[in-house]
Length: 93
Image (cartoon, rainbow, N blue to C red; front, side, top):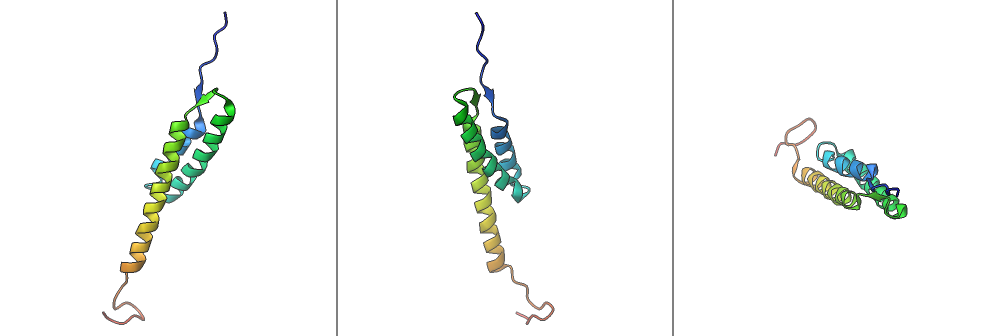
């Protein structure tokens, strides 16, 4: 009696999570994590039970969006409060 192959974890799902976590250090990683996560979820659903890792892909998507959102907030705060006074061609405060 032959044994059925056990489902394998999607490499794209793992890449999604790793890239999203690495996005904390480098912003492009979070964007890649989001993209890989959506690709992995569609591949896992299309595989019909042969692949697993939908939770990893979802975690990569969520972490990626959180990192991108925090990056946007940081940029907004820097622009809003990060003015320099007395620089070249700038009046003293």
